[in-house]
Image (cartoon, rainbow, N blue to C red; front, side, top):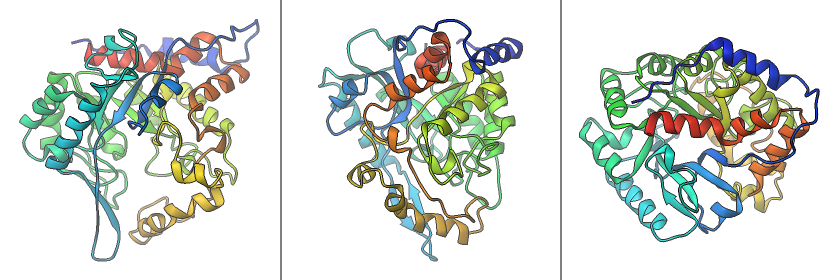
Amino acid sequence: MTIHITRRGALLGSAVLALAPATFARAARSPAAFIDGLSFLPEDLKDLSRARMAAMICDVSEITEVRDANGTPRYLRDFETNAKALDAAVARLADTPYGFVARRGADIGSRPGCAAFLQFQSCEPVGTDLSRLATFHEKGLRVLQFTHHNDTLFAGGALQRVQSGLTDLGREGLGEMNRLRILPDVSHGSEATMLEAARLSRTPIVLSHGACKAIVNHPRCASDEAIRAIADRGGMMGIFMMSFWLTRDPVPTVDHLIAQLRHVIKVGGIEAVGIANDFPVSGQANLVKLGNDNARGVEEYLDWWKAMNREGIPGFEQLPQHVVIPQLNNIDRLATIDAALDRAGFRARDRERIMGGNWRRVLTDVLG
């Protein structure tokens, strides 16, 4: 199994090049392959082609919403529901020319259609039975998140009053993920979860979708220490579309996304960052219906936000004013970001890395 340990000096040297304006004519061509670090199978699978994605990390987990005695919502993923959801996703992708279940990084571009690397956004379906990891892997699962916001049997979540890291079961599970070649994902994890997973994993890990705490100080965002730890082990993070974690400014723009990308490059190097989504391929549907009016669209998140504040979770004191960058809440998101990077002075080679090359490298390093 390849372990990709990145040289810090080389990374930071590339970062300087990416951040500096080009002094010569840049190639205007688009990258050969767009890769999305986190999205979902669309109702119309042809959207995979319309979005021009060569590959995606595809969350196929299904959640059950429950509420605490005080009304705080929690989102759970049980074994039976998610075993069926995984089978259903595999079946859907077996019967379309627009995508297929990818089992190795080398599958990207090996046949027509979008290579879908199937993911669960929590270890909850595993329970305490680590043999389920092999079962899920055999079915097609290739990326696994330790937690989604809250503590699990594997690890501490980001949105807890008392932060914790990997549990004994989580450390054992990480070893099994390494053995099976399942890509570990620390998105939604606590700081301790991120740092410990980066230190203990025998393969690169990813933070598939998130943002930088140096820009928005919130526990859902990653500290520079965590970004650096992930990058130093050959991993990376994807900057996502949830705009209330991209900027505190009242009007979110593509420039705020680019500022996040630049920060990861500054801290971890040009090989440490990519694009993620965390919305459907064609955009967050409710916001599309509202014409991407953030003042109305953000309202659906406010009850949850207020509940987190009542729980005493840091970062929820100030109500958000937006949830999406309007220019990016559509199926042309990746092409729009690529064009914005070109206008911002990123060289063609660095754009290729950000728009898909880094994802391809990590997926190939871990999955083969």
